[in-house]
Length: 461
Image (cartoon, rainbow, N blue to C red):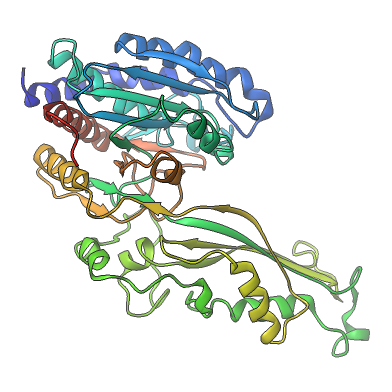
């Protein structure tokens, strides 16, 4: 059997409807990790769905309890040779709230539904569809090789990604030996665009920054007190403008990343950010000057205002409010000095005349990415191009955030993400979906990657 045969088997799995039926069964598990009542569903997904599926692929598996007790994990392993490469694959079976009753045309979020080229259902894009593609591709390669993969494979499936992966780092640290591998390769998030295969090497980090101005209890009549009482909302918006201006440009050096290197620019030179018809248009004259859209999205830091509050917007009173609050988020790339950032912001605001603005961080996650010199990057890109005939976009990091640092820093693995979704997939919202043509292509991409992994006589170094 050949590489072409493995790819053909993956494509037939899709065309026959077998893959879609498998995904429909998995979507039916209401694995909302943000809902404390769904604990039995989280466990059932692993025990009733994942463990039998891995057993059919000749993997041994076991449930690993989380230290906090919030959500269990599944470890699965298939071993063939001590000299063959070992890949660690990740996926998460939990989803966000189903948002029943909010889906277009009355769709049930817990059943897949086809409309044109879209397959709707909660988890189709994030992440049941993506790890199901990878498992189906493994099956195609195994069948083509007569019951062998040609490499060693390990899986970790978590059920708490949508609540911030609270135990993933601790679990991986405790089970370093069980998760030892030569390469981490997984799928989550969107491609650059629906029609261009994409590899990304890590992710941006994030810090939520709370700004609070608490001047007094309650509001005071604006006719009686306007002009003699400080307005916390006015103070707050002006304080924010000293951090990020009206065009989204960072104003404080402590918020900025290191200067872009020629190496990063070369990776992004052919990357175009082009929204589809149902995605928002890019804003003109927004973001850091002198950078391309791809550089701003994948290689620069951004400070976004996520929410603001002062007074009652639904029933505004003729009164000066006593408090104003905002939640901002800094998305940052590798190399950004985030230690002492909150202190730097606080000192900056004091220096600009805003000592009354309280500053605190409430949530953070690390930035990480694979070393650009890793031979696995070219290997993966060449494999994807051979399968699809398209040069994949190779992004230094995903624009959003994933727990990549667990695998790159705690486990010390080169990390390559191969996303199977696209930017307009509506993940975390009603009408989440995957695209059928993209799904078929993704199955062939992964079958090619797994076949090529089995052709390596030893791990790349």
